[in-house]
Image 1: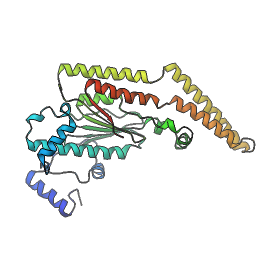
Image 2: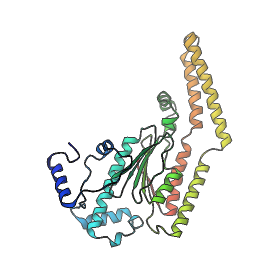
Image 3: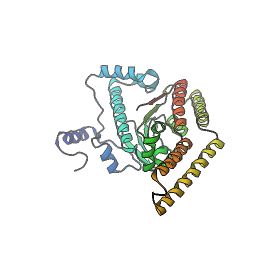
Length: 315
């Protein structure tokens, strides 16, 4: 059937393409399946967007966005171009949230890049802790952080943690230093979602782009972020001790389970096994604490405000 489909929507698309021409979008790693599952009703024509009350929506957008985050050439844009920008900015956010909903529970990192129109122009898949760095100047990046909950715990362990230590699942995994550096270098609006469904947004200040002063400011910001990460996590010696304790308790649990399997529950009862499971998971969730990420989340808020950028936890 194709993207044009049938009915009024398909007929309008065909009419707009005939009148305004078809949009040309260069893509990398983006399949038709990705496009059709995330943006089935995407615009295909080069027609500019419209709003019912341009003046009202422009004033509303300016007020909500803030002067420092409007495009540098905003004052020179025509009303028609401002409306086109506003609609496409709104569309980019909708697509970004749809992508985050799609990838939040994935055990590997997935990266999607959108251009200024909100078109998906790049897709790549990494491993449990990394995905290649790529940028679209002035566009939007969307990726996920599987985090410890998906990569370091089995589904059975997570069930026990939810029952025994529910407070240890409340940590968040926001942007890394490299995520922020990419957003600054590409002047991108960045979104990330963690495995618990927490969503985060970072948007660089639009003042002074491509100037030496801005470069110095962004460099200082990234250095402060690096120090933030170092300070948030425990000292290496303490972390090694935590992991060694965790591994020791795991060996003890596995030895008990092997004996229980061989000799039965009469001699090796479940109450003892449950006690060993609790001790092991207590040690593991201490070694893989989510608390440092809470510190990073607050630190990101403070540093973004200090350097004039916008950072929010959306959910």
